[in-house]
Image (cartoon, rainbow, N blue to C red; front, top):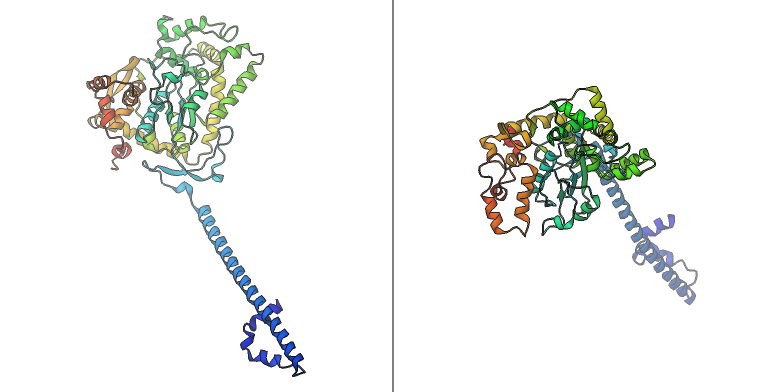
Length: 484
């Protein structure tokens, strides 16, 4: 480096008087001296070229070093801003579409510690919801039907006769011009392979379901599906006693269960449990454990009916939804509510529901494990319940007798003109039927014209004309809370 410093001073030796003086130091003034001077001149020229090249290299290196420092400084500033950013301080608004979401799924559908995976996520485009019986799943299906309409996402629609029919998923039963869609949220015989084939896979679909305490689910289903007609008795409790007396061998000697459809171990059946294989297995406990492990890996979330509002708030957080997306109207409450309080009968229900009991105990535990990862979720729940109460007040003015001996909502004048109020108050079967009539190419113009005249005498739920014309993009939360 010393030589380099010296050369850097004598950049232009041909014009430097000091150099001429040094060149005259030859002892002879003859040709030998001239040759020496020429050689010296050539050496100096080479040295000068070396000097220039080296300085150019040093200049480039200095610039690179400077750029590196700048890059490092910018990176440090960004990292500092990121680390000091308070992600939990983002205000919760009803209309936000992108919110800080802090989760990444691991291989079993669970979520890692949010603080290590903070990132912005977007609303899902593709969703598979496994609808279960007497769990509140119809409310979630309604949420997903509205979500698809508001966000211009297609429903994978499937033709069936009744809302409670078990339906084998077949491609020929999908609507004519839509063999693949964004959202599936209907009752169907479990077939996840079929749904993965017919729901868009990019981005990968978000898959979730909901289950309920098997004892309360049994009692609710027994009444709703009118089983007392098959087991007549003075009270619901007595009718259930007759049912249990006729099923003493179920899951002991046989898996056959008379009149058990949508009633006994219905959660497990809806999620694909094979009772025939269970009974044939030599390791029944192992069979159930394998089933639970399979479902844990398959479902990103398993919601719990007993904590319905909290489940919706968890769903909102995990899927970047808004309050507008998850508000709902309470409806289809039983007109006549009977209770079962005999401890012996409750114990027998628990026994006959033993597969569902294991399923429920497992996913109730994982549900609360997910809740514990959610900072501020109970404050979020409080806000949601206040908002949902306001939406109920805005849309609903009273009750009337409706479907399957349940109460239905009578809408306010404002509610009768609002798409969201009407849609929230429309059962899934007619809602899906209207969407199919609108979207299926094989539906004739004559059929559509007839639908346009139907339902006009019921101002409390959507009709086909409103499906075609009403504005879906009003902010129901702002309207209901007065923040327009």
